[in-house]
Amino acid sequence: MLDRYWDGVVDRISPEAPVPVLRVTRRFERPGGAANVAANLAGLGAAVSLIALVGDDADGARLGDLMDEAGVGFDRVVDPDWATIAKIRCVARRHQMLRADFETPPPPAMRARLAERFGRALPVHDLVVLSDYAKGALDDCASLVRAARAAGKPVLVDPKGRDASRYAGATLVKPNLAALDAMLGPRANDGDGDDERERLVGALRERFGWRHVLLTQGEGGMTLFDDAGVTHERARVREVHDVTGAGDTVLATLAWRLAEGDDVRRAMRWANVAAGLAVQTFGTAVLAREDLIAAFDDARGQAPQA
Image (tube, rainbow, N blue to C red; front, side):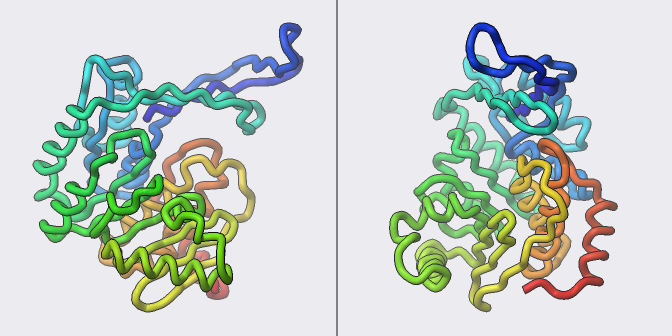
């Protein structure tokens, strides 16, 4: 996706309707969706390839330029009759006033070509990240997960929607509260709170073969569910400016640290620190590797989170 920002000042109400008038003073673009995950991975020093659907249009070309600038190998699956997904955020004083989305479901032929590209890329990569934004590219991603696991590659998933079976066999699934509740269904709000959620997550893990489930909860921190039990990390946030793209930053940091050989708990600690940095930045943004390392070193000198 291409994230476009119209930033400006509101100093009057429209005479045509009771709505604020944004006087745009600055316009800029940033990579969004899976492109933001890839850009963050590259910013952390990982060698990363992005396979994604784009249109043969100006937004697709701009996204390609942004990926080139980020140092991401961009394998574009292009359809001249399909438009690149884009968002416009109208912003004043770092507060979103309105978001406009431009999107249509991709044709099945694009997903088939994405799977072909995926198969060719798989042997020369160490780890797979699936960033699902429910835009259609990963509607039938079960075959991608199976191929990666058969090749011995860990698979990290940021899920969306109720159909958890699409991610069967994934190594780690990273839902937020809304995504987890969608997968769990009405039972998620029944029973005895945390104990019931732990039981239901355990049932999902057993059913779909997930080794780890990492639940992100914003200011509530992160909770890891796996065979070792439940591990919680409190959020490390000083001041929240914008939560846009924070989940992408978490996913990228997890992938980076796991590819570097960390165990999942240490990777979670890195991701928790990264989330705290991400929400202090306006808009979708790429963390600087040195900033994250410094923040992680600082966090290690503080009391353990529990």
